[in-house]
Length: 133
Image (cartoon, rainbow, N blue to C red; front, side, top):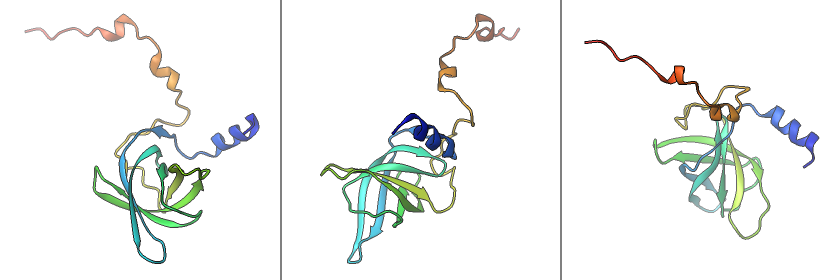
């Protein structure tokens, strides 16, 4: 990917991605029987996630994503398939309906710079007077 295409992809992102491993179950039908695979997210955002799966999926395929922590389930569409190498393949899943609360995470606002959280704070902002008794 060159710099121009990378900038274009970033400009198209609708919400910030957060790298976090949340236990999930991906469920779908392969025409013969229901399939269920337990995995963890690689990244999440307000519009979906990426996971690593052994299951054979196709782009535009519908799947269910079950959040093991909250016991909630949403319908998703496969919108990205990584290179198949015999290892679990990275799969991008997009919620059928935007569900920013599905992950129970507060996403950073647009334009947020992760470097800002590393800025030193002043001593004055850290001190707060104790209440008088």
